[in-house]
Image (tube, rainbow, N blue to C red; front, side):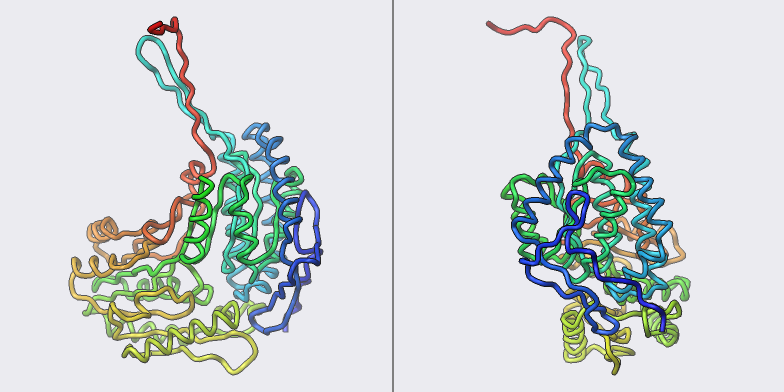
Length: 488
């Protein structure tokens, strides 16, 4: 069995450039999902810890904002270099924290976090406004100013990536951040805080505090906080959005989805099946953008299910620290129970379980990837986000009909289309109500491309130059070149 990395954090929180412990906070056990063993214990932030994190962040932000964009960018780029140099160490920690296979974390977690730091580090020097010529020789200019203190609330499926996706644009724009990871995966963000200090960030600029909903609520409602950025479920997002609105705070909400993936008869079968696998079973199905409603045109339906079943037979379920493993456990016992409940509901409502859906008789929260066919649009498994390895396959006949069915959801995070007809691909994507879309691919998330949803899937965008608008505020300045006249 592969060696296990050291997982116990030096302390629970990282504030003002150093680890901080306060054992008065409720203990939070960190359980390795593949073994059900407790690998670390942290303590939830007390009110004193929260106050210290906010106070030090606001102090650090003033000096950080006074630097040039180029100076800020150099720090972020150095942090990216450090992350890449320590990719294996960070990936192993992510695997212990989340249960995701090391085969996956080595290429999709710390590396994507480093990409974000590098990208926004390069953008930092170019964050500027515009000159506006006006009649009579007057003119105006705009500038982008920092918001101030941002709070980041992370999810447990991509703890390192999410911390970087929020921190990188926030810091590039001259803000400070207090980040609260999910209580399920508290370890990885602490390493990012360490790395930023090593890269030259001032103490207090990026603080990490631990805790569950109560800590998140305390951060989101604090009058000293200027923005809240959440990655999480719709119910959590509603609460955070309402709390932020009460204080007129800026928000970015990246929430859940029940996204459609449409496969037309003329699709390349291998590519379409590969897209469905990536859009349903990567990270054991625990991805918000997953295309879990797979609409397959009737002419390809039988062949699609047959080939999908064949390829799923190649799943390697095992120790996630073994690089041969390509499918890991769910995050927790609670999530396992939720997913098993949906599988039972799907069978109860008449869907046909083609394969998978069984819990393995071994330690850990392992569940084989499940595929349901004969799924109707009104079934619970086709309406609600499951956040686990459960695919619903629905047959369709015509383009207009499948577009209407795909849009018949409260969500609007992602959508995908597989077809060899590129005109149809663009035509269909243009009518799907989703923020992040794919043609003959699924779940790609390069940092250069904005990511986010519509409808109940969220507000605002992460990544790309679009993120700059969500972590800065526009200031307009009117310059009069002539005399100032008044009626009296």
